[in-house]
Length: 317
Ligand SMILES: [Zn+2]
Image 1 (cartoon, rainbow, N blue to C red):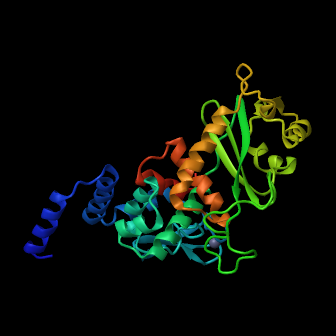
Image 2 (tube, rainbow, N blue to C red):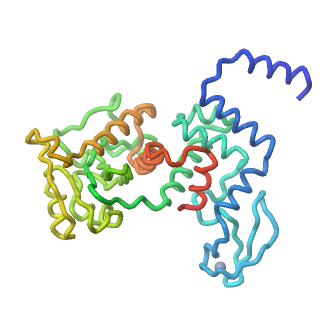
Image 3 (tube, rainbow, N blue to C red):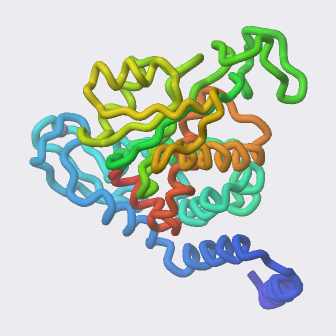
């Protein structure tokens, strides 16, 4: 860039009223320009010394570098790998743009806005969004203890982005054909304890079942937790079969709070999720799991910087 070009850029920057997240994005750009290898160092650090992703052998030796990352060769199976092999981030390119891109995920930018900010194609922006969200889904969910509220929220099924719809297209978001919670809805089960540890699971179409509660909820629930839910039969059957203590809040009968027993923490999470989801103008059912995980990370506010997001996505822990 000639000195006149840079003067034009500096002048334009000085004239702009940049918002806080635009400034954060710019900061990411500058950091990547000053230290292009920074992202690679973070990836290597987060992956640590890993076993072979093909055969789990720990007998590996260094075998040159490729695309900025150390390559290893496994003495067990003879195959090579790097820090990202076997993760959703393997083979994604333009790694020096990952940190600025993660800032866009933290800011909940749309695919188009993130593409513009990081200067990648819209298709790349879309692919990266879902690869990073898939990677973050590998982080083990928090363990829920003490009083644990659980409740579902429902999302009208959407085939957004599909080439072949198995029903006539809905106009402007649309409505369900039948009243109540039918198989026209995807169910998102949310459980939250009073220290605000939260788990969100997409359980499938239609109302949650006791079997789905056993699959999703049981592994994250402390054995001495006290489960609080509405009067849905699935929770009662789940509590009976697993021996988990259970309190019912009969929301439909107008009961909201009984002492410390309520499900307002989890219902607050549902409200924030639905409001946040609006910016995306409808999300496809097949990606709902990613959006629930995305909101889970944002709402927990434990990972707040691109660096932390990258480390969690690479390490899956
Ligand atoms: Zn191996």
